[in-house]
Amino acid sequence: MRQLGFKTPAYRLYAPWLHRLTRLRGWLDSRWHGGGPDEQRELTNIYWDRYLASRFNEEAPALGGITADAMSTGARRSDRVFILGCGASIARIDDASWQQLALFDTIGVNYFYVHPFRPRYHLIEVGRSAEALAAVRDELLNNPDRQHEIVYMQIRHLLNNDFVLNSAPGRPLLHCPPQRTRLYSPTTLPTRDQALLSRLLKRYYLATREPLIHHSSNLDCAINFAVRQGYREICLLGVDLSGNQYFFDLPSDSPAFARAKAAIEADYRACQWDRQPDQIHATANRAITDKLGCLTIGDYLQLVDQTVLKPNGIQLAVCNPQSLLVNHIAYRALDDALRHKG
Image 1 (tube, rainbow, N blue to C red):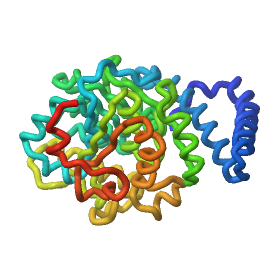
Image 2 (image 1 turned 120 degrees about the horizontal axis):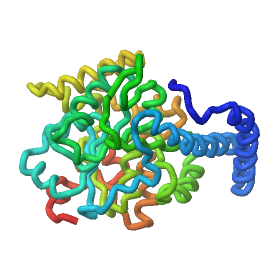
Image 3 (image 1 turned 135 degrees about the vertical axis):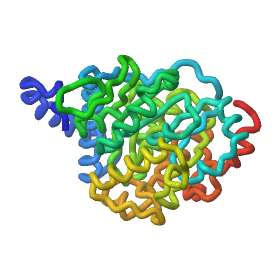
Image 4 (image 1 turned 180 degrees about the vertical axis):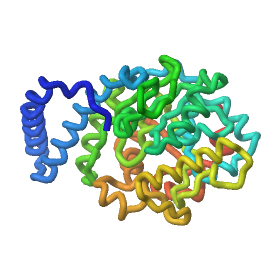
């Protein structure tokens, strides 16, 4: 991990005392709500992570980006937004539908940037490999035809991999133009206690000045981003979860698709993971999420929908009838979602 600028000698002196205060806060919060030692421990970790999220933002200039403090993006062009995942079902969307999608605000997640469609926003967690960094650099950040697309990158992934967006001797480079990339530092909610999660979601999910919430995947972070921007309807495309096959895995003569596939495979090698296309996605695999201390993406989004979205009149739907999410949130046919511009 990159050396963090805020970890000064002074920080190393006061951080232990600050952590003790955080632990006291966790104890008081847990006692107030009748929780036990496990909840106290989880709350301490969550509050400490929220503090670190704000400090990580201070590293943005050193990485060559700008800090996305309040995640402000300007005026919405529609009340309905489409979040574009990388599942194989993306390949089944026809040209007429893509033309209609261009009338709405859209958010591309992770490797969606290799698709010919140009979203308004990108929320990207970069992989660990040099191939992943080179792909996002060449296909998106340094592409002069794509300067109007607003790019957000997860700062913790850049820090963990010691990636910088500007020149630095001996480090992977993006040579990113100044002010091109906004860096966001989400906070995590590492708990499987749904009652505790509900309480925290009610407190933080709609708070525009708070860090984005990232529970089990960058997809749920993108949904929180959409809510913070004030969209009243959120439709998910290319969110399949029934397998690990992406739209760029399918036969194609696209060099960008080939780069994304090579980057994904390099990421899996770097993490020593075995990518099995026919198995359900890791974020939907309970055996994996249990080990990580979080809910599956389906269980989490169902909780968000019931706890925050529906009570506030925000509609969340998935537009792929074969998605695993249809067991957790509403299904809406794409043709219906495209019929009227919100």
